[in-house]
Amino acid sequence: MAFNWKTFQTRTLTAIVFAAVMLTGLLWNQWSFFILFSIIHFGCWWEYFKLVEKIYKIEIGKTIKYFFIFCGFTLMIVIGLKYIGINIWVGKDDFKINIKWLIWAGSFLLLLVFLFQNKIVPKKAKWMCLMGLVYISICWGLMLDLTNGIEYEIRDKSKFEIFIQNSFQIYIPVIIIASIWINDTMAYIVGSLIGKTPLSVISPKKTWEGTIGGIALSILIAWLIASQFGFNIKTMIVIAAIASIAGTFGDLLESKLKRMAGVKDSGSLMPGHGGFLDRFDSLLLAIPAVWLYVFFIMK
Image 1 (tube, rainbow, N blue to C red):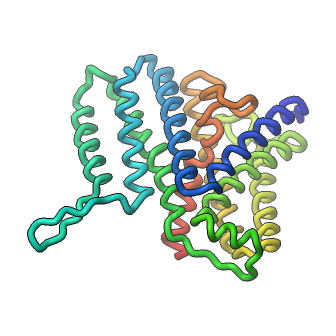
Image 2: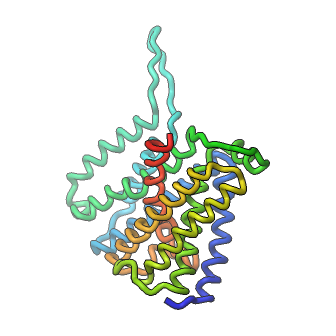
Image 3: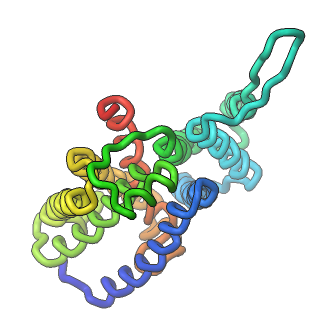
């Protein structure tokens, strides 16, 4: 496809504003991080419901929507925040009851009841709603979990590195998000300039040349950043590669959902980028893939 300067300028300006908001939420403190991804979680769910409604030509009541968003939110907390509990003393024994697990257990029982209420939502749409818990809520829960107890190697402590250390564990999440942004931008530029071979019928505008170029440049930039700031080069390169490759599949998955729903964008939050799902579709598969690497291979 031909390179469109007007589209690129719109996407770039929107991306700059978006990046400023994201970086503020990521770097400020733990609560800004949590609030940021809670808002993203809600936005992704709301647009996901709209796609499901268009795919099955039904209307999902607000009660059902808020119920699933609440269940998803508690699931995100269960996965991502490990230390929310209360101690109850009985005699000489100390029993610790974890509030978040109690809330999620109650939500899970209600979900089971919902499965048998076929008159509320058609069966196929119902399973799509349940899949949203895996597709959206577990993803953002794993993102929060990546900020807990991740150790990384520092060879030469610069002021930037000390800032990163003192700003809780945002090292891995920042690498993932940066890799996705770089991959998306470079894939668009390379694909527009030299792209000729369509990647998939699901997303005809994507090309193999753009996809490979985006992944390669994402890895190259990760290597340059790691070398400059003293990060672990292997960790940076591997995570950048995993995030870029898995992110491409995430983009294709959301494109498939939009084709099934017959829409171009999942929302209109950001000019040139679409809605929440359009902006974060790559992360929804990249985060679980990186999480598996971090907790089962890197550690």
